[in-house]
Length: 300
Image 1 (cartoon, rainbow, N blue to C red):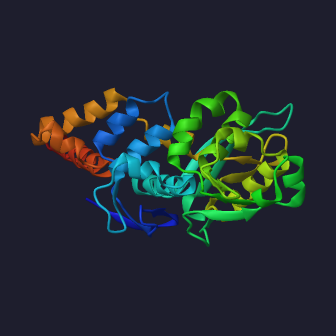
Image 2 (cartoon, rainbow, N blue to C red):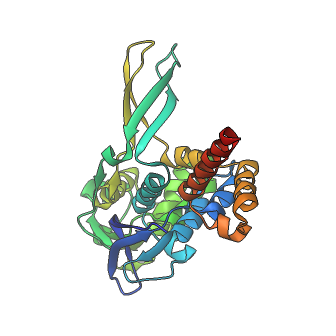
């Protein structure tokens, strides 16, 4: 089976603080497609965790890879791996249709780009924790003491996404407070500060912490620029990587099982053998069979 070695823009940090960036990926097989087909309307961070645990063969020298490990990967690293899995499955070219966001337009706009052109910025400091000193203004407005200006935090990961997803859908402010509660490791001399302590942070302190997180985190720029052919105005909009790529990967149970039946009927392979094929290999055999059947029919 084809494998690919990639370098994470962030990195996985083990229990000793050692950072691993090298990742070995294997393509999706029929088993993963079957899993995705069963979650067509439930695209979630937990589904990303499951998919990555199946398709990441090694992280550095660590193997096998568990769901808990892919859950601990940084958000940008998980997005990066989805990009690379997409390239292994469909190639790097992306064609999609979006709606023009300008008022009184809403026209469909075709976009075409390569995933290899998506800007990816590696984090300079691999952590696992980072420090920030809050400004005097942020301290005073939050009623904090001067000796509480020093904070230690980690960057958001997949587990944070999974845990906070229900809150994010209904209350973004509460979700951000929950994220700070999970990521802030220390305020002043107090380790593992209480949720009440973090909830008292001033808006200015929250903004400074968020900016510090963004500055330290690896980045994948998923902002698309386009020109509407209908209203002739330019616009930019965020590209929902997770929704789009999972939409591409969703295969109906019916189509998948028909392909398995087709190959099993002609080659007499077992379901288990065929479901272990990546999509590209499965489709290649179907193509060869179709050509051979057409050749035999024409020879009669």
